[in-house]
Image (cartoon, rainbow, N blue to C red; front, top):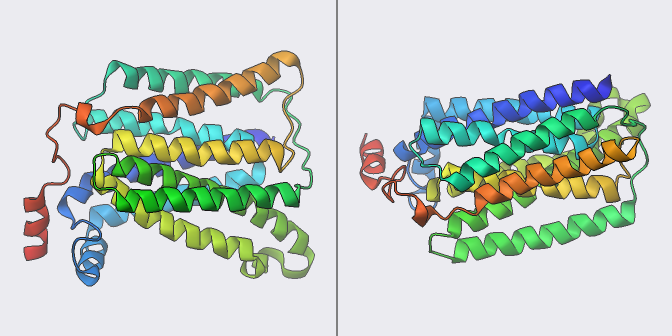
Length: 309
């Protein structure tokens, strides 16, 4: 029952998060580019934008639901459901933002949908018994991912070509994936402190505060990526990498169990490959291949008009 509830909440979370990303991307053309205007001017413009604040609020709400889902279900189940929400964003980007989708884009979307269907079937007979995580393996993964994310983000900030947004998307995806892992650790920590602090145990969990810091950093970098690239490119990369890492760590470090039966195990593994593979397929598109005018969504005149006001 908890597993099914976790999946439902994860689905709600990914719908909210992706719809929030769509609203923010739509509004970013009216806001100054982060890093190119004065910090005070940029912050004021963002916080005075009602559409952007609405989108940010919806995305934060989605993150809250996602954290609840992590407490109820294994990472290897929650993260693929989270990845499936990319379909909503891609459809909105094509229909509402005017970003053109190629045949390969639709192949990626279809692959993700098929993966979600197989994942739903594989939930049957899935053990939900929690096991203690392997601390040494877990921290090795965390340190490695921090190093990879840091080097990727540095490469993104140094580059000035059309692939900058892609590198940012990968780096942000790794940070978001690390946040999911830390939140899973936070829930474990909360359980250990429950008799003493109850829900107040969050305050005393440093995993929780690291997750909060990473969330804030990821939010800023995500805005930069959306300003410098198209949603149909950036979001698949963020989604793919943010889900791949927790799924892998969930199996190896958190010792999450697969469903019973060869067929169900096959469905689960294939569903993960299809969902993550679909996100990767969508990320292969280069922005230069999009026939839409190169400056769409980043029109300087719109920014100047906004600042002038």
